[in-house]
Amino acid sequence: MSDGPQLATLLASVLDDADGAVTPPIVQSSLFSFENYQAFEDRMAGRTTQPIYTRIQNPTVAAFEGLMAKAEQGDAAVAFASGIAAISSTLLAHVQPGDQIACIEHVYPDTFRFFERMLRPFGVQITYHPVSAFEEDADLLKGVKFAFLESPSSVVFAPMNLPLVAEHAQRHGTITMIDNSWASPVFQQPLTLGIDIVIHSASKYISGHSDTVAGVVVSSHDHIARIRDLTLSLLGAKLAPFEAFLLTRGLRTLSLRMRQHQETANLFVDRLAALPQVRRVNSPGANIVPGLKGRSGLMSVEFDDNVDIPKFADALQHFRLGVSWGGFESLLLPASVGLAQAGEQNSMQKFGVSPNLVRLSLGLEDAEDLWADFSTALSQSAA
Image (tube, rainbow, N blue to C red; front, side):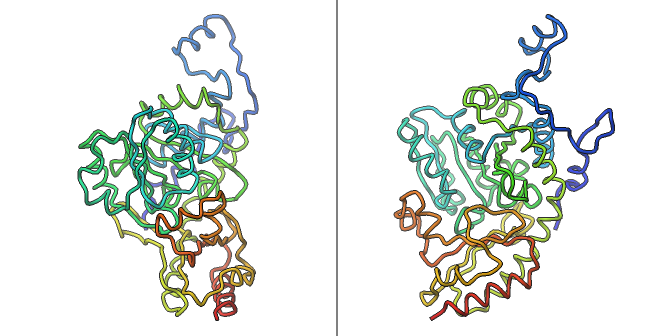
């Protein structure tokens, strides 16, 4: 497994600080003043880049953004207060009423809700397609302004041939955007595969400690400048300095943590395949599609009808029930609960999600302890 262009070393080299600090300081200030009138005028005219107001720019946040741009091999990055803020702010900066968005079928539920509850009423047209359609139909994106992708997708974790889809999109002038939270920059760098914009729910693997809610967007200078000018400044979903400090800390151990998540996931995939109660395991591995260099700890398992999922969930000792993922702790999310939390039970049937599906986030606990817990709970819940 490769970490990309010396990613671990790159992430350890955070800043060039005159005082020799090895960690970016927390600049907990809302306002930045100027020494004289000319300096103030130059900044307001855009001739300099001195920080002016933390809603727009902060040194601690900028340090994190710079690291993320390097990790994803992008020109620049902009950070937000949550993953959905990163998604919504990027889309609102680029689409207008009458534009068309093509989205993968199994998308993060709150992205789906943003499309249906916010963008569609404003006159943006959204269509949903399986991964295979993006790959096989070269004209799927004709007339489409924006393609929203995940690889792998949420819930069922279907991987996508990103270079092929990027080629189709470029032919039609479609902007491509991908949620890369599952793989992290350690296992996938979509910008190098032809994708235009990469976003992360930085609350997940980027943070790695379940103590931060954040999002980040990485792209070209032009795309990031547009987002900064329009939605970051006018919607105000900025990242706070302390959260940026925590995220920088998380980035420094990202490569090590992703390796451990992968080792545990490989163990589970191998052993789950031998269980009679398991119909299907959704967990793409390294090199299954171009550019995917590893397997993260997030997967889903479809049980047969003899497994009592509520009983199984309650029998677990090391796995907790929760909606997030990417931290030290292992989590279980039954699909019937996770997709129905906002009254959208029909979305499971619409996109072909089995009610017997559970999502697992395999954390950093001992892999054998996790497996013993999982297999014991399963044996106690099967009829």
